[in-house]
Image (cartoon, rainbow, N blue to C red; front, side, top):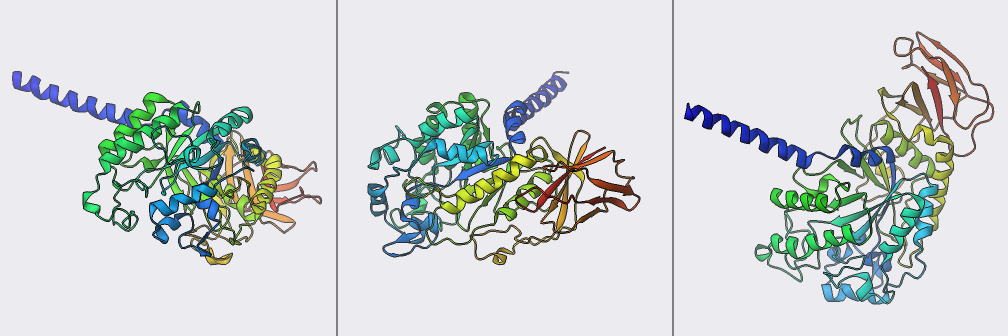
Length: 458
């Protein structure tokens, strides 16, 4: 009998342990709701690499925002870039207003990238913008104020498993480590770096700027499961509603990230596509490969219809201004969103994803060379679908014809009661049959981009 009781106790303890672990890694549904509703966010890559604008010693630098690694620049030499880093044109309110007007709901900014330089006032690490630059200010304080004013979530990017300033950060293959300043990979102890730099800085980011919507980690590299767990527990103990992406490592994140690509099909679990607006993540003066506003709206629609969020990157200049090309595109996105926001916010995937769409994953050369960009660049006409309550949204992407024949929307799929076009006051002519739904586009189309949205009542 005692043996049976002992075995039962072991089983109960195991179940409790599994339940506790599941609770530790499951996202708080309330905390996740703002992100699921957000759909569209602004990614900002800004750091010392922005100051050099893609050049090093008069030549185009290898590896762009990773050029400290690409050029194997000694830390002491790389750190001198801060002497000229004086972003006097930085205006947090203008940045946040640009995102707000574009229809975005959250901002993710690089608090610390792989170069190890902190873009905020870090009491634990003097290698930061306040202590080493002539500007001497903390941009995150102003961003926190502006985000609160315009009701956007402030979120921080943090390079977790790569740091070229710290002597104790090995990488999986050694290729991405600082081996010119710190050549002995075997002597590097990630645990020392984790305790000395990561945990103090994450605590700073969570205690100095008010509520933080999201911690967007990058490159987990050699972090252990125990360390990922401890980091998550620390974050939740300080800000329980702060969510975490999957790059905290070891399955401890709240959602997954698709970098420079869009998932092939609808994904039920929370996911996000982070994509560059141009060819590079950080500001490069000679970058001429910019996605058109039409292409960006196409990508936003595709991501949302597949159940994801779209995190679109802008690379501010070293002086604190957005490139003119980025500003123009944000304005164009905003004009489209003002007409069609109801078809972006609050929608979920429909049982039919699209029709007429052709996958061209990997065709980065269609608009020029980009950095590991695997998103499609085609602008051929097609249609995507999403739903909200008793409404189906049909997105006619890059549509030039006067008729839209949606073969997917037969009476067997849905009995349609009404059809209207967002941004148009005209009565829409339509006919549903066993062959699908035929819509006649109005004579006067909404001005702007050729991505039109039909609101279909069922």
